[in-house]
Length: 304
Image (cartoon, rainbow, N blue to C red):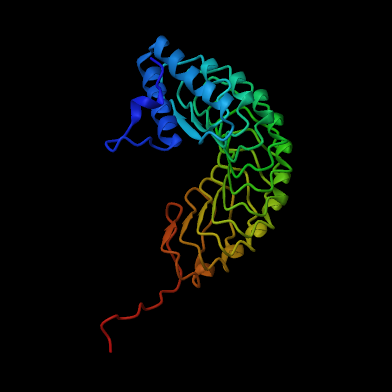
């Protein structure tokens, strides 16, 4: 049954704000997808589409369809006020109905069989996109979405990130488990704070040298050996180098904000050079290697 405004008067007989109706119908649509109720899906989606069509200033709304047993999202076409959409762990492959959702800001397609993101090329309002575990290998449709702030393409078939060269607004980028070898497009992404490059075939991290806003960086199980490009990352708090070919940690000596450092499986044998990092208590060393940093006495809080 289509939801109308008269169904939602409050106790005082007043009509609640339009946002109330929108959220109510959106929640009913989520429930209909959960229950596989085709009739209710049709009714509620039609209501939302009509409101979007006739009320350009309609309050925005979200839909979380996580793990729903759905493969067809055609009922979402035309919902131009939809800004946040979760489709993770569904069977959705065809995302062409999303092409018209020009106000879409956040989209989660994690662990879906999606293999073509061409329909997203016009979704220039996107700021947060999760493509982890999808079947994609080509991210060229993202070239024009320069407002992206968070992008996850972990565990996909992506090899080339050149289409991201203009994505200078990125704050978080997850390329872990991909076949990306050339990370030169990252050179211009100076706003990056979190980057995952673990389990990739990279061996040259020179493009990261100017990313001084970095706070978390994962390079575990890569082919890197030289940490010199990281020397200027004085804001770095978490660094994972597990399973790399690193021998010398001297370039990390000025990372005074460093809290956690994983060196398990590396060729590092001496960490005394890190003795002046006051926050570094979480240091994980290779088997048989001792923490040989000079011990500094901790202040006694009870001493007057």
